Image (tube, rainbow, N blue to C red; front, side, top):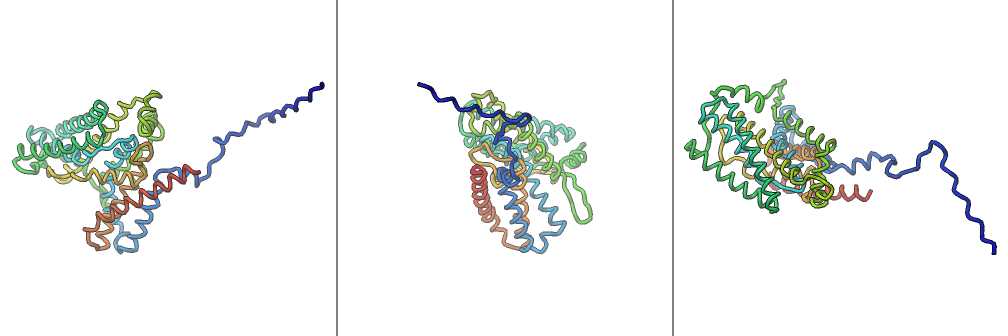
Length: 356
């Protein structure tokens, strides 16, 4: 029996033509935009900007925009590390009072030791970083949820802030350190401002933009950024592939502490004195800015740029209500509504990106 002849071999690919790989296919601009976690926040920011441009006559004034940027920067400085922490799958409920702790330590140490204020600033840095290390260390050692760990730190710091301030100063606020050596140079770094015409720009805006740039570089251009996304996506899987999960988590909490120190020094050198009860509740504003900016509550997704856009939305809303002469009692309602709408929009954008 004669067997059929085998089918002819396929012709070889022409010389110089590489095999087609769908991973190497060009990606459209729309698809790249849909893949960005901050897309929903940018759309929301544009909508808020247009809305208040019509609702408040003074909203578009140069002086008003500088005020909006300052409000956004005070939230944005902390929203950046909180966003990175959330991408890593964790929370920090002590971030708000940690800012106040940083300012209190710097002020009271300088005043009581009658030293140069820079000594108090450096001591404050060490103490604040130690708090961040404590949060990360306790999280990794006890395996308790970050909500419980940082809630405990929040309550302890709240009590310590009030207790030590009343014990040392005899009141709920610190003594002024404006006449101490080094105060002017420290103020120029943490609380200076420049006036250009009718616009006053404060140094916190530069701090904010610099932190956003550094955080974006870390997330997108370094191995540490890959570790952060991997830990947020799944700590066990990340550990199995060699990611240093413990070091990454501790580093993220110390990053929050570093930015809390920057914010605390700004408060101190802006007003000379610090109220021990400040900062309570601000941690939710930082989380809201990060969530509005596209960070998922479950971790593994988000961006530093998105947190900046979320903080900018906060600045526009908080000041736009004032410029529109509305009752400020409604601010929290608008903030909550924005949070829900932004979360829904971000979820829709993410689903569309995954479908593409």
